[in-house]
Amino acid sequence: MAAEDHRAAPRANSADFADQLAWRRLTARHADRLAEIMDAHGWPTADRFGADAARAAWLIAQHADRQLDVQRRALRLLERAVADGLAARRELAFLQDRTLVNEGREQIYGTQIAGVRDGAPVPWPCRDPERMDERRAEVGIPPFTEYVAQFT
Image (cartoon, rainbow, N blue to C red; front, side):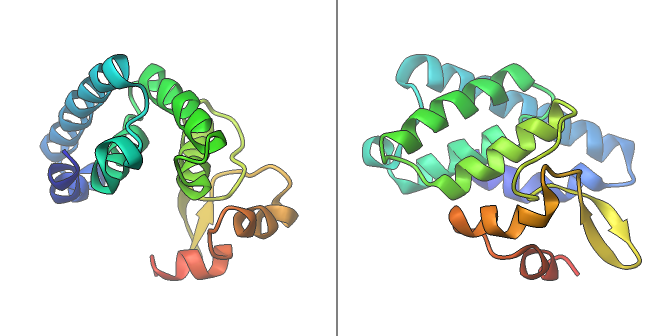
């Protein structure tokens, strides 16, 4: 699923409605499958399923934007896995931000980009933005300016 997601990701922001629809269908199908996996096994951690499977589960959860129930559930399970030392705080931070943005709330780490202003990426609104880079450092995410440099 992760390989298919990577190949199809450019469709997400395509100007072509058919591409956008194909992306939505793909991410919905993947989110449904992730929900089945979580029903059967909980969060797929690297120690039980391998690093590739754990990373793929995180990616599928990230892209489950139109299935917020699946995204929220993945977030809860990933929070437990991080608390148990079985998953990375960095991945949790990205999923927390993505879920918060999808709920219409302020993100914490500034990982979700709202758009571009004056040629520079701008994050969705963020709690306590003057401390954003401090929080990012705590979970292993580079400062915002370094992070967005990869997009420009």
